[in-house]
Image 1 (cartoon, rainbow, N blue to C red):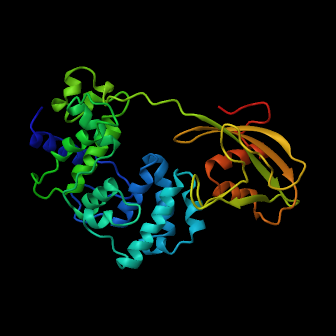
Image 2 (image 1 turned 45 degrees about the horizontal axis):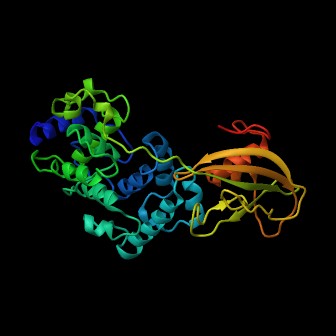
Image 3 (image 1 turned 60 degrees about the vertical axis):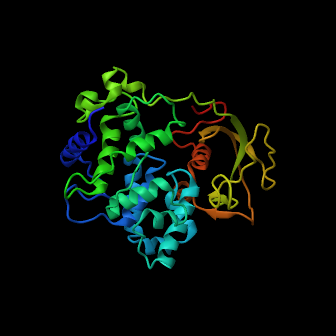
Length: 355
């Protein structure tokens, strides 16, 4: 393995020239430090999605809630609706809890150490390290999936993920250093992330363009793309359910508030049965229900098939909203059902199952 200082120097030089321009960053060498609020917000968003997908959400959030105190004052329902499409609504609830803790307990200023950041609601080791390094120039060991992949290839680590995580984290810690005067610790963290995202990609790594290929054991062995090793995931189980799209005479859609805990907790959604192998499907109100087709949705731990049924009736217990507002606010699984019921592009009518 090539010496750590040599690898650090080569990667930081590459980052100086090739750093991605992202709305939550300041360029390498800039005297201004990134806003901790923007760094934290971007890191939470990026935990479940990609930069191209998260960027419009980030720009909308920061235009609507430009400071952490503004976000802390956001009503729960507004925040949840704005989060739709970013995955894992528990993260949105944690986002709001963290913002409120910073506003109430820290005067709207983020703690500037990993330990202080870890004490905030919903902030785990990775996010605390990222904010500490990028926003506060702390020598934190920032390890995400990109960094794990880079380490697994540099050192040709044979232990498969997820068991290899502690080893990969320890290897990454060996690169956190103060060997370039004027360089920010955040530059190193972001250089590693950029390398993993643009060069050391999960599939088809661009080894010929890699600024640190000279130190990569996996490339030397001719099998960079086979790292990190992984244990084959078990097939996701399949669950079924029924979702009811009820409209009133004016075309509004009936929504319900989901329980605060559990999948999609606290969100507005379409009324639905339980999601199991043999769901108990009782409609929310008596009506002339008709079968409209089926939708498919993939959650992290299971595949879901939902039969969509539609009717027109009144229901005093519902939260009524327009079709357009419902389509914007609903989680994607319910948005699929709504689109199907409306015959919108991308839907599948009865007898045709979505892929």
